[in-house]
Length: 175
Image 1 (cartoon, rainbow, N blue to C red):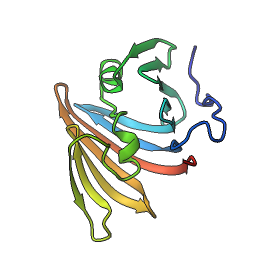
Image 2 (image 1 turned 60 degrees about the vertical axis):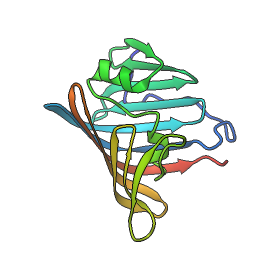
Image 3 (image 1 turned 90 degrees about the vertical axis):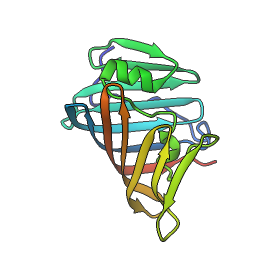
């Protein structure tokens, strides 16, 4: 199966994704001496994730799907890779780590539950900086109660990973 820029995400019926979200945005990713710009479209729920990553001109890079405890990464060429851990899978296939476990909470402007975190807040009580799971998350701009721009960085065995996110659209599913 080949990915395309107009690939559709699976239909999620209203109420079928309680507490989840859908978002689209842009990311600049730097890992070691490499890097590039991407667009992302992501549907997240408690049991599923479906994240489409395309290049700035719409060319497919990868689709990452999580169904309960399994993560499947499909490349633009249609090759599938499977693992239980999205970070290790994205590092082995794409060359950089994607913190899929913590990212849904970090995108909501909060630390991931049940794991230690260091948090610094701004004058309005919003998180300015978060350190969790060896990731440094810096909140650069807010759109009301949700982050609009953020930087994520982590030092690893293959070098430093930096992800700059700009969230263009966000829809929170009803709880």
